[in-house]
Image 1 (cartoon, rainbow, N blue to C red):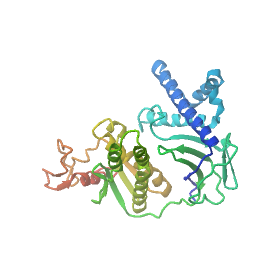
Image 2: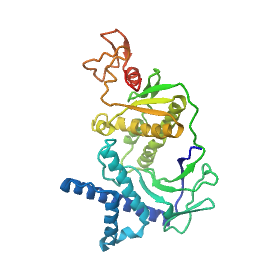
Image 3: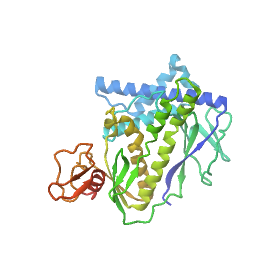
Image 4: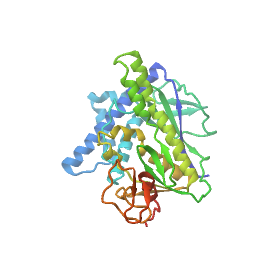
Length: 356
């Protein structure tokens, strides 16, 4: 047994009382996260001090004692502490240069969520009670939880389409390293093709977001048809995630080593002309899936330096062009006369992972 931890997500239908409590919990979690981010930012900018989780946890205790913030005591304290832990993880990634500076959470952007650890929920006979809830959640068991599994963490979310989900994290003894294979593949992320492999294969980009946004734009604002279209747009993430899961699982199963470029997605989306298309491609989500699946199944993930001129470097001889405009999709190397498809060449330049 590898003793990996796996999460399983299920839909559930809250009672009006549960929905009200969870909505208030989401608001408190968002408030505490933003409050702690502002506190840590002020400490660093004004005093050059890096506050840790323990410091913000002590400050949160004092904040909840303030009569003006008594409403924070109306929900479980555990999701609020978990918000501080998530912020700590975000700062750790920033200091390690694995991510940009943490951003404030918006009520309008993304999904609302709250995380509960063992002290804030009760699991008995296949039923789940959250802290301060008198009734168990009405979970739709689309697939059974592992027999005898004891949840360690529960995360409740409500997506932009208004659907409720509960993700249950358990130790999963069924996840084992896969048998070794000889396959090795380089992956180049793109927009015309979602990814191009060093084998020459291109995975089509379905562009879910562009198609559904156009459908939404044709509906009159405030109309019932527009609201129906908005809910369909909110489900884009479902189709995107399903495609990425299929792709990442296939790459991990077929290859012992997967190589991809270290893209700075946060900087790339600053390009207003491409921001929506880049977000729809969800490159960061694909990388995250490859990271944990390679870890689960005993595969090797290699991330290539983002400054490698993969598109304009000849994969046959190593010659580097002075420039290669984005509209040029194929080119011939002036040194060795090899002809290249831009994306296939970039994927091949990801390999070998240890350099030429």
